Length: 245
Image 1 (cartoon, rainbow, N blue to C red):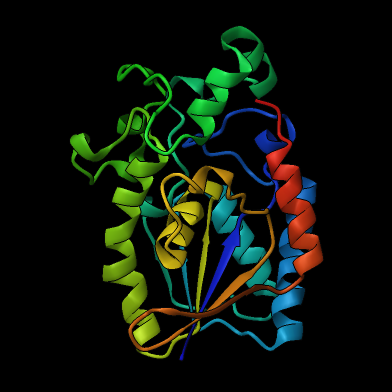
Image 2: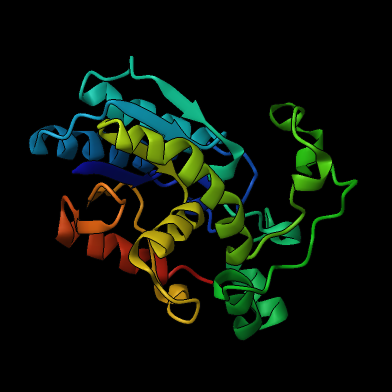
């Protein structure tokens, strides 16, 4: 049996401000730091001590993992990072207020951009200084893999190879594996694990700072899944669903 722990980063400063974030590299809010501490306490109380960490290249996921692991004295863990675990790129919406965007384009259109499986938001201009091709952390990647906008289907396509090539080998080796990432990269992974349809995936909300634990068999099929604090996770998921825009 293999143990996989999924953890969406704690509330970020732009979550708090209700802004589209995507690949913009913002930090945790004070509440987000508290959520990361609480996640660590949940892991410790459950006796779930990770053996290896996977994160995106984004600060809010990295810091969440560091704070969480510090609580259980596991800062020394081997760590693997990949852009394939980054949040979905929200294109030209990045940095915009979600409520104002809904007022400008209509709530139905913004819901499509935010939640539809296959329709991305308007793309970011490739010459925009916030485009990932200007970010040194992606300097070693071919320009044609760096997104200007993504839908969830795009995130599934870029995340899945990392799952098979990097995460699965740790699980097969018997390592309790923590993946600290983002709402959409984790939605993509949960879609794969739970076999959620393209039609149903828009309704899935991943709560911030709530460890989601999977037990997998030797073929990586799901045996069980649970949040360590189901009531808090349900409330946090509902808060995500209520976000404006």
